Image (cartoon, rainbow, N blue to C red; front, side):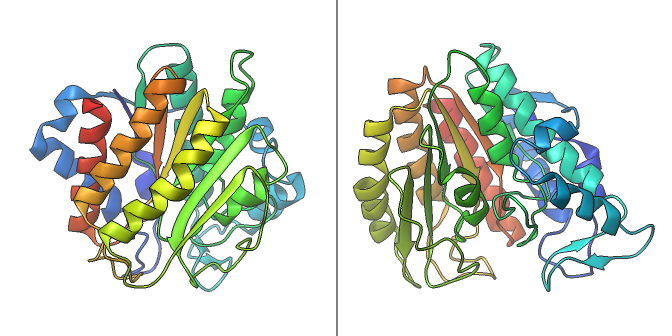
Length: 305
């Protein structure tokens, strides 16, 4: 299994106590080292994403506007929660580049599975808008990279972050070759694209206080039939871990066992119709200990399935 990460992802630094901090990556990597999971993974540093690849999922005018607002020092607010520092866009380029490189490696049969331990996250970034701590839509860029391969006609993006993957839905809502399944607390941030009705978009709404049993029943009822019908040739995961019961930004009651369970179900689908190919990338998760343990459970399941 491949593990993509880059030290420049740590240089995206925000206000003290901002939940999307470099400590998220440090906590994950420390946990992987202590658990010996790293011994089963091949670490790689990604290349930064290219501008032409960004333009496959984002408006060029939006990319120009982001670059123009990048500060020489200090922070610039994109919205009340989303800020740029001088290193932000370089960090975002490596985060998106990690998913591109992981997709290419998996499709080249270097390994069947890859995880991208990167930040800033990406699934809230829409075609022409940055929001929700996100600037470039990492998983979307990975999906269009996969579809450039003549062998790949259908992909699936599975998003179990506690917040809806509104950016991913915005980008792919009219592209039936990409199935997007997103489970999320509702009503909840970002409150966008929740009414999108398309055959290739599955919105799984979870009420505050949702239990493990209710979560698993919803995934089996909503996602599994859609995946069986779509039969993706590559599975991408927007792996957010902020539905954990300890996470400070949400109100669901999942734990590591649920992330292990859903990862196994995803791997079963990939084994059946995608030659086992899975590329996962980090999205949310803001309690450091819960995040690290949950990522560990996710990777253990990917390695074992």
